[in-house]
Image (cartoon, rainbow, N blue to C red):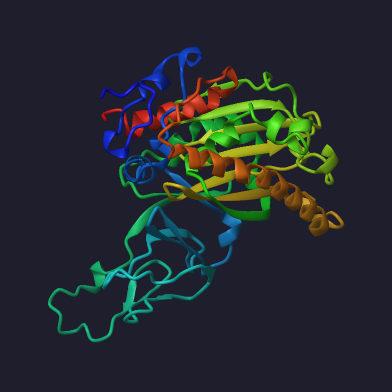
Length: 385
């Protein structure tokens, strides 16, 4: 029996049902559910996107002192970021050159790394400094047994790494972000709040959720939806690799919509309800208001689970205000309320991505950002399927 072009396809039929997303938006439909639920798609996006792009992994102030480190896993790939003795940021594959065990976990401060399995030790530059009982091995060369380096660069106070040695320079990769958002001067801000949440949905669904201006007035009617301009007043600007930017009106992210700090000094010429947002492939969504900047990172944990991290930045001047910690707690509580409004909705979306009866619906003009990002995703992962 032939399948209807919009019928949900099994993972073994990857590539089917994608023609509708390639049509002009007024003729387009969303993509089939397997794009969000298939283990095969998950592996394709790892190979074609996450192992190719520059990935934003941390703020520079999270690794401010020599010896500060952060061990992370990106779709199963272990990475280690550290500030060395000379104060330079470095990144490595977090795998001992002996058996591949992670040499350290979590984050903190250290003078060296020591593999917990056989005790091989490494300095903060990734060089091997000790490996007992290896003197008789003809295959052992200490000079070739350091932690494998990864490329690292910094933009606007954000640390990026890439697994791809042939990736273009970060400045080129993030050019549209610098062009559109350089005036925010994130390098002159500091991290005030870091919120880490796990959700029962594919990472792309939360990327799309942050681009979805259509849902705010409905789902977030009690919070941010009541303080934003009309849903058709969100002009998306589109860039390569699914990049976007958008400038619109929205009150500060705090109950009542009135900032507890006042505007960022260099945004003093902007109205109190200034807001902007932008997407940087694959998983960074920058969001700013007149008084702070609060980007999200979305990390895949599997086809149907993801981790989201929100970083709320304030200008350094705000940190000197009386009651800073109490005020930022108000922002954090409000942010949690907004994210919790999304939680059950994205979980419901994910459940129905597995349904054999799911039929992708037509796109609204308000979903231009989603349309742009998902088309880039299809081009990069499924276009030859």
